[in-house]
Image (spheres, rainbow, N blue to C red):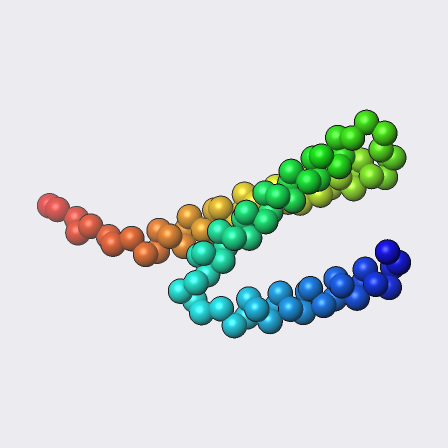
Length: 97
């Protein structure tokens, strides 16, 4: 696969993803975040598998480590945001005095 084709696929995916997420209603943001958390967890596993191979170049190992850190950060922050959004929908109990 050549560089131009990879760049074309990346640009098309970025544009399509932006357009799809922009048109999502606010009520569906929590399920959408859950889906992106699942995708990020797959990215973490893939990056660990790639960077943990026995015969891998140093560049692949460094890029794999960066991918693990970035995907883990995305995963943890996604779960924190989802938890915060779900707390917004809980009914607050009146305080008793």
